[in-house]
Length: 274
Image (cartoon, rainbow, N blue to C red; front, side, top):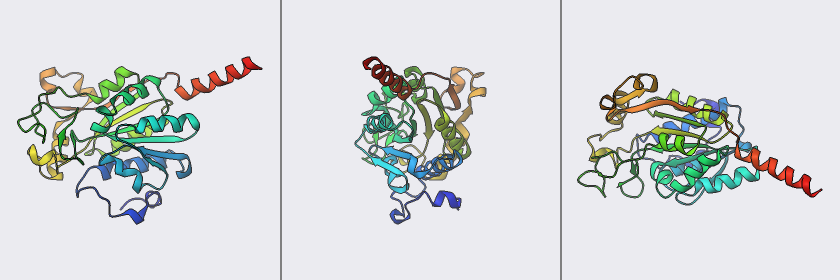
């Protein structure tokens, strides 16, 4: 059972949830709530933003300040909220398609600005809600409704993309490691800047049944078998890492945060006018 504090953050009237039985999104939501509570955040000062997709149902279940926006645009809304009130804690939950396809431009510029938002990217390698189409993270050779003979598009590495674009905290784990999910989200919230936590999760309904991972347990076992901690991966060859999921914290650095820079600019301009 969830901790009593977690239960107080749920809009119980909207349960049972709409996710498929065994979907990993529930594990991620629980990790987010535990991270917020352990970080001392309050519901009144916390914003959960989302776009469109299975993952984007999450704000409806969380009793905080929540906003359900348009497909791929949640970071644009979250940026406006953060600029209007920089003291708010903002967690933006996104799917892999929502984040890196239609929302890709917003994602790279949020990384570039280093604005104080925590992005939790729920990567199930497919468009789950809209029919099982291939996404920018669908592995080469994996099947989808739009790739019945196997995907041929090279997939994005979400963490490398975030690192290259300028995010100051970047980490990856899987739903088979719920304690790490919570820890990385907590670290992301504590970071003074843009944080990206990619969590590999399962869509056994759309991805799994086409790729020999038909049950939630099949997917959890796959994550456990194929996850490699970053420290170990650094001593492995590219051939050894083929098909593996490298987990860990890839970026932890300090850089000026965007709303701090914006506030300083406003103060300087106001001082010049006086």
